[in-house]
Image (cartoon, rainbow, N blue to C red):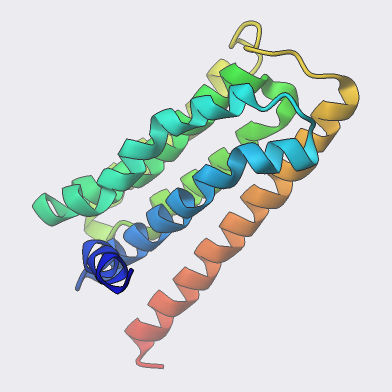
Length: 185
């Protein structure tokens, strides 16, 4: 077990604080993905089969550290892009009534956290993709894979709002850490 833990730590570690931040967020998402069907079960109801579609994004989140070792900017860009893609997939699978599109907010926040001032164009383009995903696709995904009841969608909305809010707060804490490192405090 110690060997696996050390290998995981080495895989997600990076000397660049922005890459390390992206890797840590990717790790948190990866850590939570296997539990998502359970969250759906507890918050929404017993029909959790559609939740397994969210695992399609797992390889992309897992690739963030590997890609960042090859190209720092590409690795950091992959994280919000994977999040946007996962959110769009989830909106199609569960329907927009699930409130899953709220996850676009931490994705867009990451666009402004993970890039340096000289990389502003990349940041803005990816943030625009996230905003367009909401403005252009909201309500246009077609029928979800499974229709839930009004009460179940209320549970979905509460669960997704809490989860996206927690992820956003976590990113905020990471930003505080980055600012502290730059300020020397």
